[in-house]
Image (cartoon, rainbow, N blue to C red; front, side, top):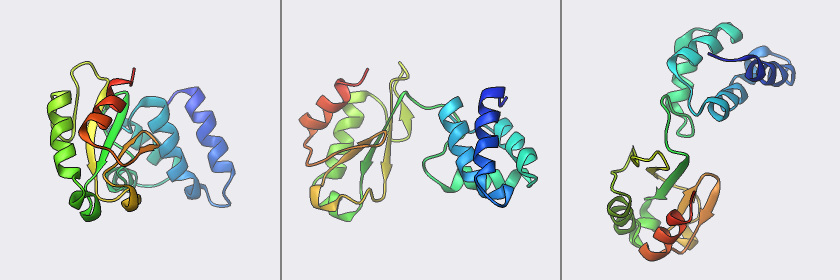
Length: 154
């Protein structure tokens, strides 16, 4: 499952730490980037590489919201729904995006282009409501502005 190229990157990550296990989180990022998810099979392979139990790797994948166990859309879109954003219309924005995309929260569009999710806090309360597309924040949005951002995605 983890090919030679990814394995070389993982080995380089491991080499950065005095203890092999220190590279595990970085290795998860490498696998996520390279395969689009950290599957159960990849988790088991990583466990063997790092000399840990598979459940230790799976726990990390399930704990951190930037890892996922199955493929998602090409674009990860998250709406911040923490209280400051909610007070400024984030929940209305999220419902509008669900209608615009034709999917619910946690789902991916039929064409595989967009995965829609929610996050508790993206740390941009002063500019709410906002969405994160990949690593890019789009702030002070209304529904029309958010739809324009999503429609511009390839």
